[in-house]
Length: 202
Image 1 (cartoon, helix red, strand yellow):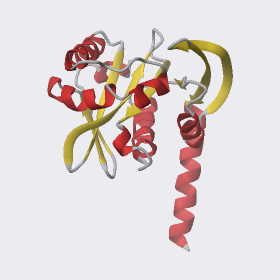
Image 2 (cartoon, one colour):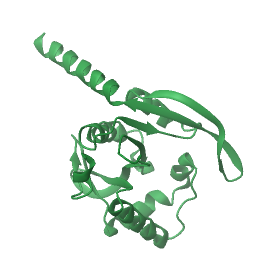
Image 3 (cartoon, one colour):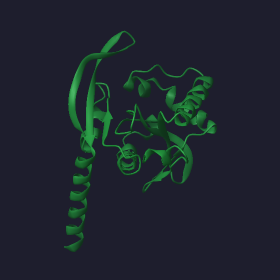
């Protein structure tokens, strides 16, 4: 199974500006800045962390999840500064790793800088090429327009809306269901390569 290698040695990913690596206990302070921000956590319907101990426990759960082959979360850092500014995760795998759910979050200080638009294509490529996924899903809340728009730009299809599926602080929210299939992703990647080659030839 392709996924075996992923859970033997944690895979790092790099892009033009970013380095995605394994989360460490020493990242807890930087993640507390993110996880304690209600504007960030309310976007996916979770209460903010109240203490650094909450974040330490969260980091431990992530490490346990990786050990159990239940999820893999990358810490997103800038290449020239090894400080956690966000995360990307695959989790909710089916039994044979044909399907997985994509999740992501970013410190508010780095919003609107194209960070996730750069990180997620690299993570998605890893999911299809290295994990061997056939389908990647993402399920943002209905009020998270920026996340929905990003997924559409990345080639995902909006497959449905579950009305008032989630509750947060006494308010019900719709949940959106997006999906991206491997052949769709490869076809789009091939089209981008062809367009790039044409521009270079002009």
